[in-house]
Amino acid sequence: MSEKQSGVLITAPQFGTGKETVGYFTGYACGYCKGNGYYLDPDIINERVKVPCPKCGGTGQVKGIVTVEWVPDGEVKSYFKEE
Image 1 (spheres, rainbow, N blue to C red):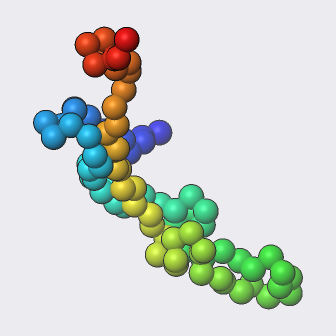
Image 2: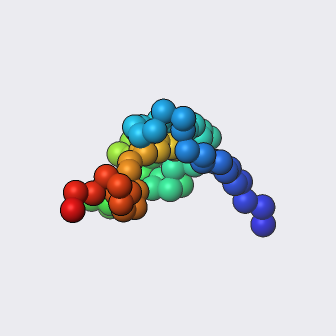
Image 3: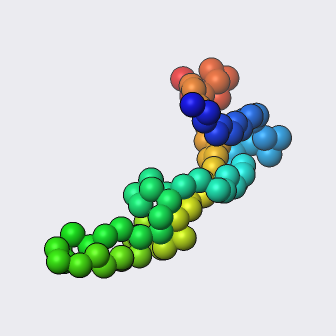
């Protein structure tokens, strides 16, 4: 079975720290409604009532927004420490 895969190459920015949006990945089927855009109301047994999916809003698709937050990492350099 084939599987759709996307990748992101992350490299440290020249500006140091902060947030950046790396990309938008669209066209994925909603896992909650299995891409239908609706689900059948379980409270109504005698008829099939379609209710819009609360996760995708009835579109049947979701997208991923990848955001990277750059923060300081590790120990402070010894020459900056007060002794």
